[in-house]
Image (cartoon, rainbow, N blue to C red; front, side, top):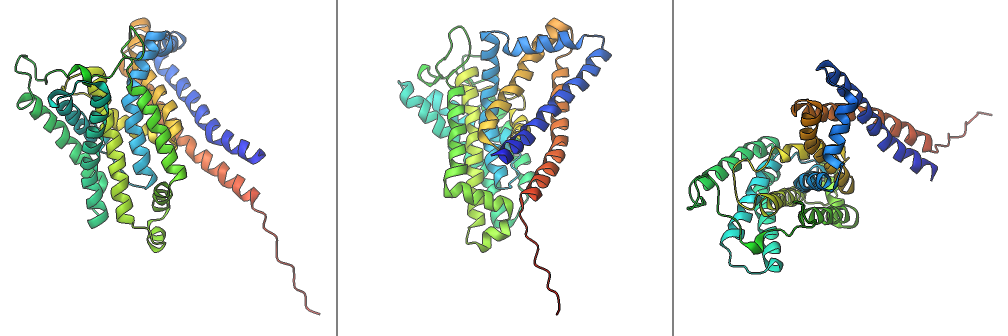
Amino acid sequence: MKNAVVRYLILFGYPLLAIILALLASSGLILAVGAQPVVAFRALFRGAFGNANSLAETLLKATPLLFAALGMCVAFSARIWNIGAEGQLYIGALMTAIVGIYAPMTSKVIAIPAMMLASFLAGGCWAAIPGWLKGRFGVSEIITTIMMNYIAIFLISYMIHHPLRDPQGYLPQSQTLQAAAKLPILLTKTRLHLGIALGILAAFIVYFIFKKTTLGYQMRVVGHNPLAAKYGGINVSRIILVSMLLSGGLAGMAGMVEIAGVHQRLIENISPGYGYTAIVIALLSYLHPLVVIVISILFAGLMVGADAMQRMAGLPAALASVVQGLIVLFVLASEYAVKRHLQSLRRENENITPLPEVRGK
Protein backbone atom coordinates (compact mmCIF):
# COMPACT_ATOMS: atom_id res chain seq x y z
CA MET A 1 0.00 0.00 0.00
CA LYS A 2 2.79 2.38 0.95
CA ASN A 3 4.66 1.65 -2.27
CA ALA A 4 1.52 2.28 -4.33
CA VAL A 5 1.05 5.69 -2.69
CA VAL A 6 4.69 6.59 -3.33
CA ARG A 7 4.36 5.48 -6.94
CA TYR A 8 1.34 7.71 -7.54
CA LEU A 9 3.07 10.61 -5.83
CA ILE A 10 5.99 10.18 -8.21
CA LEU A 11 3.77 9.80 -11.28
CA PHE A 12 1.69 12.91 -10.60
CA GLY A 13 3.90 14.95 -8.29
CA TYR A 14 6.69 15.56 -10.77
CA PRO A 15 4.38 16.66 -13.62
CA LEU A 16 2.58 19.02 -11.19
CA LEU A 17 5.92 20.48 -10.15
CA ALA A 18 6.85 20.82 -13.81
CA ILE A 19 3.65 22.79 -14.51
CA ILE A 20 4.43 25.13 -11.59
CA LEU A 21 7.94 25.70 -12.94
CA ALA A 22 6.52 26.31 -16.42
CA LEU A 23 4.18 28.97 -15.02
CA LEU A 24 7.11 30.60 -13.21
CA ALA A 25 9.07 30.67 -16.45
CA SER A 26 6.02 32.15 -18.20
CA SER A 27 5.90 34.85 -15.53
CA GLY A 28 9.33 35.98 -16.64
CA LEU A 29 8.06 36.40 -20.21
CA ILE A 30 4.99 38.29 -19.01
CA LEU A 31 7.19 40.65 -16.98
CA ALA A 32 9.39 41.14 -20.03
CA VAL A 33 6.48 42.58 -22.03
CA GLY A 34 5.57 44.95 -19.20
CA ALA A 35 2.55 43.14 -17.69
CA GLN A 36 1.81 41.67 -14.27
CA PRO A 37 1.91 37.85 -14.10
CA VAL A 38 -0.73 37.71 -11.35
CA VAL A 39 -3.14 39.80 -13.44
CA ALA A 40 -2.43 37.73 -16.54
CA PHE A 41 -2.92 34.35 -14.89
CA ARG A 42 -6.05 35.57 -13.08
CA ALA A 43 -7.46 36.65 -16.43
CA LEU A 44 -6.49 33.31 -17.95
CA PHE A 45 -8.24 31.38 -15.18
CA ARG A 46 -11.36 33.55 -15.18
CA GLY A 47 -11.61 33.36 -18.95
CA ALA A 48 -11.48 29.56 -18.85
CA PHE A 49 -13.28 28.66 -15.61
CA GLY A 50 -14.59 31.90 -14.09
CA ASN A 51 -18.32 31.38 -14.74
CA ALA A 52 -20.75 28.94 -16.29
CA ASN A 53 -20.33 30.32 -19.81
CA SER A 54 -16.52 30.24 -19.57
CA LEU A 55 -16.57 26.68 -18.28
CA ALA A 56 -18.98 25.69 -21.05
CA GLU A 57 -16.64 27.15 -23.69
CA THR A 58 -13.70 25.30 -22.16
CA LEU A 59 -15.58 21.99 -22.21
CA LEU A 60 -16.66 22.76 -25.77
CA LYS A 61 -13.01 23.11 -26.83
CA ALA A 62 -12.04 20.05 -24.80
CA THR A 63 -14.50 17.78 -26.63
CA PRO A 64 -12.64 17.33 -29.96
CA LEU A 65 -9.32 17.26 -28.08
CA LEU A 66 -10.65 14.44 -25.91
CA PHE A 67 -11.76 12.28 -28.85
CA ALA A 68 -8.57 12.85 -30.83
CA ALA A 69 -6.31 12.28 -27.80
CA LEU A 70 -8.10 9.01 -27.01
CA GLY A 71 -7.37 7.93 -30.55
CA MET A 72 -3.69 8.74 -30.04
CA CYS A 73 -3.66 6.70 -26.82
CA VAL A 74 -4.88 3.65 -28.72
CA ALA A 75 -2.23 3.94 -31.44
CA PHE A 76 0.64 4.86 -29.13
CA SER A 77 -0.16 1.98 -26.77
CA ALA A 78 0.68 -0.36 -29.64
CA ARG A 79 3.73 1.82 -30.40
CA ILE A 80 2.27 3.05 -33.67
CA TRP A 81 3.08 6.70 -34.26
CA ASN A 82 -0.16 7.95 -35.72
CA ILE A 83 0.49 11.61 -36.54
CA GLY A 84 -2.61 11.80 -38.72
CA ALA A 85 -5.35 12.69 -36.23
CA GLU A 86 -5.81 16.05 -37.95
CA GLY A 87 -6.59 14.45 -41.30
CA GLN A 88 -8.76 11.76 -39.72
CA LEU A 89 -10.71 14.51 -37.95
CA TYR A 90 -11.32 16.23 -41.30
CA ILE A 91 -12.49 13.02 -42.97
CA GLY A 92 -14.83 12.33 -40.05
CA ALA A 93 -16.23 15.83 -40.42
CA LEU A 94 -16.76 15.29 -44.16
CA MET A 95 -18.80 12.13 -43.64
CA THR A 96 -20.74 13.76 -40.82
CA ALA A 97 -21.74 16.58 -43.16
CA ILE A 98 -22.76 14.22 -45.95
CA VAL A 99 -24.92 12.11 -43.62
CA GLY A 100 -26.28 15.10 -41.71
CA ILE A 101 -27.28 17.01 -44.85
CA TYR A 102 -28.43 14.40 -47.32
CA ALA A 103 -29.58 11.33 -45.36
CA PRO A 104 -33.34 11.46 -44.75
CA MET A 105 -33.65 11.55 -40.96
CA THR A 106 -36.33 13.05 -38.75
CA SER A 107 -35.20 11.91 -35.28
CA LYS A 108 -32.04 12.65 -33.28
CA VAL A 109 -32.21 9.09 -31.96
CA ILE A 110 -31.43 7.90 -35.49
CA ALA A 111 -29.38 10.84 -36.79
CA ILE A 112 -26.78 11.07 -34.02
CA PRO A 113 -25.81 7.37 -33.95
CA ALA A 114 -25.72 7.39 -37.77
CA MET A 115 -23.28 10.33 -37.81
CA MET A 116 -21.19 8.76 -35.06
CA LEU A 117 -20.90 5.52 -37.01
CA ALA A 118 -20.18 7.32 -40.31
CA SER A 119 -17.46 9.51 -38.80
CA PHE A 120 -15.91 6.58 -36.93
CA LEU A 121 -15.76 4.39 -40.04
CA ALA A 122 -14.47 7.24 -42.21
CA GLY A 123 -11.68 8.23 -39.83
CA GLY A 124 -10.88 4.59 -39.12
CA CYS A 125 -10.62 3.61 -42.78
CA TRP A 126 -8.48 6.69 -43.47
CA ALA A 127 -6.10 5.64 -40.69
CA ALA A 128 -6.22 1.97 -41.70
CA ILE A 129 -4.43 2.78 -44.98
CA PRO A 130 -1.10 3.69 -43.31
CA GLY A 131 -1.79 0.93 -40.77
CA TRP A 132 -2.01 -1.66 -43.54
CA LEU A 133 1.11 -0.27 -45.24
CA LYS A 134 2.95 -0.46 -41.91
CA GLY A 135 1.89 -4.02 -41.11
CA ARG A 136 2.23 -5.41 -44.65
CA PHE A 137 5.27 -3.62 -46.03
CA GLY A 138 6.88 -1.93 -43.02
CA VAL A 139 6.25 1.57 -44.43
CA SER A 140 6.78 4.31 -41.83
CA GLU A 141 3.39 5.35 -40.46
CA ILE A 142 4.83 8.71 -39.44
CA ILE A 143 5.39 9.75 -43.05
CA THR A 144 2.16 8.31 -44.44
CA THR A 145 -0.10 9.76 -41.74
CA ILE A 146 1.46 13.22 -42.05
CA MET A 147 1.05 13.22 -45.84
CA MET A 148 -2.55 12.02 -45.55
CA ASN A 149 -3.31 15.01 -43.33
CA TYR A 150 -2.71 17.31 -46.29
CA ILE A 151 -4.75 15.12 -48.61
CA ALA A 152 -7.71 15.27 -46.21
CA ILE A 153 -7.49 19.04 -45.69
CA PHE A 154 -7.32 19.79 -49.42
CA LEU A 155 -10.09 17.27 -50.11
CA ILE A 156 -12.37 19.18 -47.74
CA SER A 157 -11.42 22.43 -49.47
CA TYR A 158 -12.35 20.97 -52.86
CA MET A 159 -15.63 19.53 -51.60
CA ILE A 160 -16.92 22.80 -50.14
CA HIS A 161 -15.85 24.80 -53.17
CA HIS A 162 -17.56 22.46 -55.63
CA PRO A 163 -19.74 19.37 -54.90
CA LEU A 164 -20.95 20.29 -51.41
CA ARG A 165 -21.05 24.07 -51.76
CA ASP A 166 -24.27 25.68 -50.58
CA PRO A 167 -26.03 26.88 -53.76
CA GLN A 168 -27.80 29.61 -51.78
CA GLY A 169 -24.65 31.03 -50.20
CA TYR A 170 -21.64 33.07 -51.26
CA LEU A 171 -18.99 31.54 -48.99
CA PRO A 172 -17.20 28.21 -49.58
CA GLN A 173 -19.21 26.11 -47.16
CA SER A 174 -21.86 23.42 -47.25
CA GLN A 175 -25.52 23.68 -46.40
CA THR A 176 -26.48 23.52 -42.74
CA LEU A 177 -27.21 20.14 -41.22
CA GLN A 178 -30.78 18.96 -40.75
CA ALA A 179 -32.31 19.85 -37.41
CA ALA A 180 -32.26 16.18 -36.35
CA ALA A 181 -28.51 16.00 -37.05
CA LYS A 182 -27.53 18.83 -34.69
CA LEU A 183 -26.24 17.75 -31.27
CA PRO A 184 -28.56 18.87 -28.44
CA ILE A 185 -27.40 21.61 -26.07
CA LEU A 186 -26.69 20.45 -22.53
CA LEU A 187 -26.58 23.82 -20.78
CA THR A 188 -29.01 26.57 -21.74
CA LYS A 189 -27.61 29.92 -22.89
CA THR A 190 -24.31 28.24 -23.79
CA ARG A 191 -22.95 26.28 -26.75
CA LEU A 192 -22.07 23.21 -24.69
CA HIS A 193 -23.51 20.17 -26.46
CA LEU A 194 -23.88 16.43 -25.99
CA GLY A 195 -20.41 15.80 -27.40
CA ILE A 196 -18.63 16.22 -24.06
CA ALA A 197 -20.76 13.45 -22.52
CA LEU A 198 -20.02 11.21 -25.51
CA GLY A 199 -16.30 11.95 -25.14
CA ILE A 200 -16.24 11.02 -21.44
CA LEU A 201 -18.15 7.82 -22.24
CA ALA A 202 -15.60 7.05 -24.96
CA ALA A 203 -12.77 7.50 -22.43
CA PHE A 204 -14.29 4.86 -20.14
CA ILE A 205 -14.83 2.51 -23.08
CA VAL A 206 -11.18 2.85 -24.14
CA TYR A 207 -10.10 2.29 -20.53
CA PHE A 208 -12.22 -0.89 -20.43
CA ILE A 209 -10.64 -2.10 -23.69
CA PHE A 210 -7.15 -1.48 -22.34
CA LYS A 211 -7.69 -3.17 -18.97
CA LYS A 212 -10.31 -5.86 -19.47
CA THR A 213 -10.07 -7.20 -23.03
CA THR A 214 -7.73 -9.48 -24.92
CA LEU A 215 -7.37 -6.84 -27.60
CA GLY A 216 -6.08 -4.30 -25.08
CA TYR A 217 -3.60 -6.84 -23.71
CA GLN A 218 -2.35 -7.66 -27.21
CA MET A 219 -1.93 -3.96 -28.00
CA ARG A 220 0.24 -3.48 -24.93
CA VAL A 221 2.32 -6.56 -25.73
CA VAL A 222 2.90 -5.39 -29.30
CA GLY A 223 3.76 -1.96 -27.96
CA HIS A 224 6.33 -3.34 -25.52
CA ASN A 225 7.96 -5.89 -27.81
CA PRO A 226 6.57 -6.71 -31.28
CA LEU A 227 9.07 -9.53 -31.74
CA ALA A 228 8.08 -11.25 -28.51
CA ALA A 229 4.42 -10.74 -29.38
CA LYS A 230 4.95 -12.45 -32.73
CA TYR A 231 6.66 -15.43 -31.12
CA GLY A 232 3.85 -15.54 -28.56
CA GLY A 233 1.33 -16.17 -31.32
CA ILE A 234 -0.05 -12.61 -31.69
CA ASN A 235 -0.74 -11.47 -35.24
CA VAL A 236 1.23 -8.21 -35.09
CA SER A 237 0.05 -6.95 -38.49
CA ARG A 238 -3.57 -7.46 -37.46
CA ILE A 239 -3.06 -5.60 -34.17
CA ILE A 240 -1.42 -2.70 -36.01
CA LEU A 241 -4.34 -2.52 -38.43
CA VAL A 242 -7.00 -2.76 -35.70
CA SER A 243 -5.19 -0.19 -33.53
CA MET A 244 -5.05 2.29 -36.40
CA LEU A 245 -8.68 1.63 -37.24
CA LEU A 246 -9.77 2.39 -33.66
CA SER A 247 -7.39 5.34 -33.38
CA GLY A 248 -8.59 6.94 -36.61
CA GLY A 249 -12.21 6.22 -35.74
CA LEU A 250 -11.97 8.17 -32.49
CA ALA A 251 -10.22 11.04 -34.26
CA GLY A 252 -12.97 10.97 -36.90
CA MET A 253 -15.55 11.38 -34.15
CA ALA A 254 -13.71 14.55 -33.10
CA GLY A 255 -14.68 15.91 -36.51
CA MET A 256 -18.26 14.79 -35.95
CA VAL A 257 -18.68 16.71 -32.69
CA GLU A 258 -17.22 19.85 -34.27
CA ILE A 259 -19.54 19.74 -37.27
CA ALA A 260 -22.72 18.54 -35.55
CA GLY A 261 -22.18 20.50 -32.34
CA VAL A 262 -20.41 23.75 -33.22
CA HIS A 263 -20.29 24.72 -36.89
CA GLN A 264 -23.38 22.75 -38.01
CA ARG A 265 -22.06 22.82 -41.56
CA LEU A 266 -18.84 21.84 -43.32
CA ILE A 267 -16.35 24.69 -43.58
CA GLU A 268 -12.64 25.18 -44.17
CA ASN A 269 -10.25 25.21 -41.23
CA ILE A 270 -12.64 23.39 -38.92
CA SER A 271 -9.72 22.52 -36.66
CA PRO A 272 -7.12 24.93 -35.20
CA GLY A 273 -4.71 22.01 -34.89
CA TYR A 274 -6.74 19.78 -32.57
CA GLY A 275 -5.13 16.68 -34.07
CA TYR A 276 -1.60 17.85 -33.30
CA THR A 277 -2.47 19.08 -29.80
CA ALA A 278 -4.04 15.69 -29.14
CA ILE A 279 -0.64 14.03 -29.58
CA VAL A 280 0.79 16.14 -26.77
CA ILE A 281 -2.25 15.49 -24.55
CA ALA A 282 -1.95 11.72 -25.02
CA LEU A 283 1.75 11.75 -24.14
CA LEU A 284 1.29 13.99 -21.10
CA SER A 285 -1.49 11.68 -19.90
CA TYR A 286 0.87 8.67 -19.94
CA LEU A 287 -1.60 7.10 -22.42
CA HIS A 288 -4.19 6.71 -19.64
CA PRO A 289 -7.69 7.28 -21.09
CA LEU A 290 -9.16 8.73 -17.89
CA VAL A 291 -6.25 11.12 -17.35
CA VAL A 292 -6.82 12.31 -20.92
CA ILE A 293 -10.12 13.84 -19.76
CA VAL A 294 -8.36 16.10 -17.26
CA ILE A 295 -5.46 17.08 -19.54
CA SER A 296 -7.85 17.86 -22.41
CA ILE A 297 -9.82 20.24 -20.20
CA LEU A 298 -6.61 21.94 -19.01
CA PHE A 299 -5.38 22.48 -22.57
CA ALA A 300 -8.80 23.70 -23.64
CA GLY A 301 -8.73 26.12 -20.70
CA LEU A 302 -5.44 27.55 -21.96
CA MET A 303 -6.96 28.03 -25.41
CA VAL A 304 -10.14 29.71 -24.13
CA GLY A 305 -8.39 31.75 -21.43
CA ALA A 306 -5.97 33.20 -23.96
CA ASP A 307 -8.64 35.56 -25.29
CA ALA A 308 -9.47 36.80 -21.79
CA MET A 309 -5.78 37.25 -21.07
CA GLN A 310 -5.46 39.37 -24.18
CA ARG A 311 -8.43 41.57 -23.23
CA MET A 312 -7.85 41.98 -19.50
CA ALA A 313 -4.05 41.94 -19.27
CA GLY A 314 -3.15 43.40 -22.64
CA LEU A 315 -1.12 40.37 -23.66
CA PRO A 316 -1.03 38.72 -27.09
CA ALA A 317 -3.15 35.58 -27.36
CA ALA A 318 -0.10 33.81 -28.80
CA LEU A 319 1.42 33.92 -25.33
CA ALA A 320 -0.97 31.13 -24.33
CA SER A 321 0.72 28.96 -26.97
CA VAL A 322 4.05 29.84 -25.40
CA VAL A 323 2.70 28.78 -22.00
CA GLN A 324 1.50 25.51 -23.55
CA GLY A 325 4.91 24.91 -25.06
CA LEU A 326 6.69 25.57 -21.79
CA ILE A 327 4.36 23.21 -19.92
CA VAL A 328 5.05 20.49 -22.48
CA LEU A 329 8.82 20.99 -22.27
CA PHE A 330 8.89 20.97 -18.47
CA VAL A 331 6.57 17.96 -18.18
CA LEU A 332 8.57 15.98 -20.74
CA ALA A 333 11.73 16.85 -18.81
CA SER A 334 10.06 15.64 -15.60
CA GLU A 335 9.58 12.20 -17.17
CA TYR A 336 13.31 11.59 -16.74
CA ALA A 337 13.01 12.11 -12.98
CA VAL A 338 9.87 9.95 -12.89
CA LYS A 339 11.62 7.06 -14.64
CA ARG A 340 14.67 7.27 -12.38
CA HIS A 341 12.62 7.27 -9.17
CA LEU A 342 10.37 4.44 -10.38
CA GLN A 343 13.42 2.36 -11.26
CA SER A 344 14.89 3.07 -7.83
CA LEU A 345 11.61 2.09 -6.17
CA ARG A 346 11.49 -1.11 -8.21
CA ARG A 347 15.00 -2.08 -7.15
CA GLU A 348 14.13 -1.51 -3.50
CA ASN A 349 11.13 -3.82 -3.81
CA GLU A 350 13.14 -6.64 -5.30
CA ASN A 351 13.86 -9.17 -2.58
CA ILE A 352 16.95 -10.84 -3.88
CA THR A 353 18.35 -13.37 -1.45
CA PRO A 354 22.10 -13.92 -1.98
CA LEU A 355 23.27 -17.44 -2.57
CA PRO A 356 24.89 -19.08 0.45
CA GLU A 357 28.64 -19.01 0.40
CA VAL A 358 30.16 -22.39 -0.34
CA ARG A 359 33.29 -23.01 1.64
CA GLY A 360 35.63 -25.83 1.15
CA LYS A 361 36.43 -28.15 4.03
